[in-house]
Amino acid sequence: MYSTVHRRRYGAAHASVLGAVEFIRPRMGVPDLSLELLSTLASLLTVLIVGATAIAALGQLRHLRAGNQINAVLAIGDKFTESRFEQARSLVNSRTAEAMNDPQFRAFVIARAQRKPLPVIAAEMRAILDATNLTGNLFEEIGNLVKNGIVDETLILDVYCTQVVGMWGRLESYIALSRDASNDIGLWDNFEYLTVRARAFLAAHPTTYPKGVPRIQLTNPWHDELKT
Image (cartoon, rainbow, N blue to C red; front, side, top):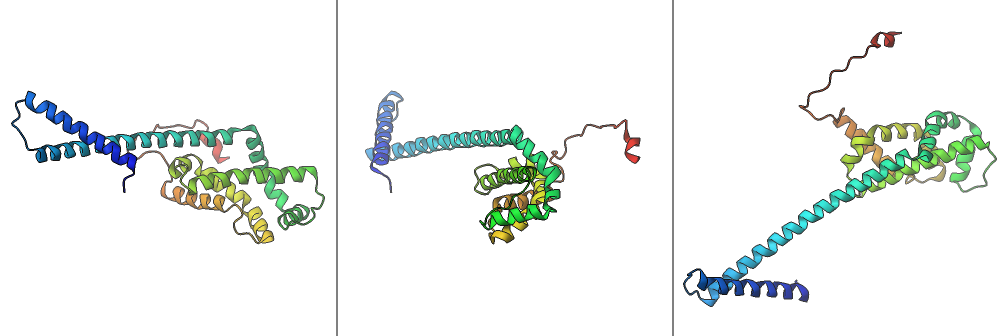
């Protein structure tokens, strides 16, 4: 059903086209046409005009969506290069696995997941925990954006698939402990979804280099050092 506004716009367009036909006909030597035929021609022209307008609008929407996608991907890139995140990621890469082997650290994780009084742990351990949560939360946010189609999955995974898979591997034991302690399978489930999609992307695209495009031949002058 068309609204009153749509009907008025369509009627105005129809009347304009009909008037144009009446104006052009005598000047081009076109014989007299019946009003019914003129109305039919005007309707057809109106449909063409409306269709062309709709196609142009769709094109503008596609450009707008592409622009939004670019902005979103750039914003995610900015997050990855923030010093706060880089420091957190470095700490996770070097210390989280070690911390998970510490019973006191695990007791703190369990108590927090179960909303119980928190035991005292060293400030260094607390910093590792904060870095772990900051890193996991960022991947959780990205997974949510990808899952809901806010950002294009291929654009994200083309750049970050190895980081997603690698970080899940480093945090998997922490996630398993936290989910078990809290009885919450939804903990970082968007991060989990992103990891599943990233693994599938890597399996389908061992390299993202376009097929058929020549590669640059590289020579490593220190190849012999790899054997030592």
